Image 1 (cartoon, helix red, strand yellow):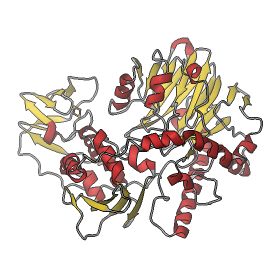
Image 2 (spheres, protein in one colour):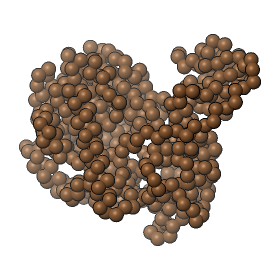
Image 3 (cartoon, rainbow, N blue to C red):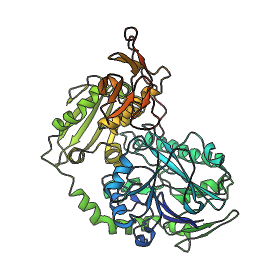
Image 4 (cartoon, rainbow, N blue to C red):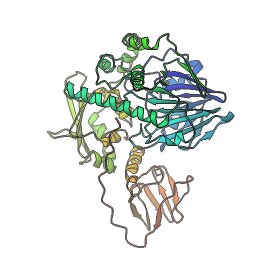
Length: 532
Ligand code: FES
């Protein structure tokens, strides 16, 4: 099995039974803030893109690069699709021209032509990626590889049970805005950053110890920041609180702990894996030296990309957008429907939007308890975000449903908060569509053992649709013995509980012989600890 590094989380896997290209990313992501490091734009993408299979682990823009996929990746490739609750990934890939899809079942091995086996584990909580993150396991001719990517499964047993893994590809660096964007004294920021940096390294080692693969490839980061406004986030300033350590820093740390099986995968690195060996050739003569000269590499890369950044910036102003009015129109209906997320956020969130002049500020509050979007009053808020009005205009103009996968990951904002990290804030702002919100609400509801039933017509049914968890008190229509969920039109036969639209997805239902049960009071969800 041959693995070719193609940058960041991307790699091409070649076997005797076909090739798989994973997560090709070249163009800047998140308002032109993240770039792949090292630069991978000079690779021979015409050739790399001629593959049998394409695997896009999830929709984060440093894994899903629409322009690159469209231009360079063969549309004859079969897409290995994770089992996500929504069809967004498939829809986006179809829009780009891909027509062949293999829809996998999470944690089930699929044997492809020629004896190539793959298994995809899909993680689907609202905190996993943009509603979904995944890992790919591959086996050919007795050699096994786990591209864990940036997914965070609770354990790796499902993979190790399939036999010894020869290569593990795993994230080790930061991929978040914390703590850099927080308005904190420098010393506190450094302390939090150091904690985070240590924690992400520890987590990586824990996964490595779990799997005990023959070779470990640190991948999926760090990105680099080429805009002058964000340059300080590159780990070139000797800041121990920087959360973006590079591959060489990780390998040095790893070797310092006594391990000797780490392999750096630069764009263009080729590793030939056998049961006992990993022969690796790099595109540079001296990998350590390459990282020692990182700043020079970044400065040259920055000079090449400056026009790209400037061109992107020129598209961010949409003065015709009435930001308050449009936020009201888009967000208030979702606030109205939100039970778990709204309760989880538990307070108002303020956006301070800096005008084109760099000085004037318009403050808008998203009031979760009050379920409204309005001009800010003199009030305490749970979180405060300060960003350019132009960025919010762009999000509203394009109808972006995921502000995490655009604004927040861009790091083009500053933030302050009262109290602890609150996962519900970000879960809400990645769910600015009916479909996503219903899924997230249902997911949180389902975490309760006493999942709620409701009375609809002559029936008592589970409150959440078995498809994507829509609230059936809003979307369920009963017609005789059938229930239709109007969110996607799925139908259910209530006497048998059978789903008439798709296999599986039974609904819990029985005829109402008594009055509807008193609704269970809505519990306050217990936040899980922040993963980043
Ligand atoms: S959530 Fe899709 S049909 Fe109900």
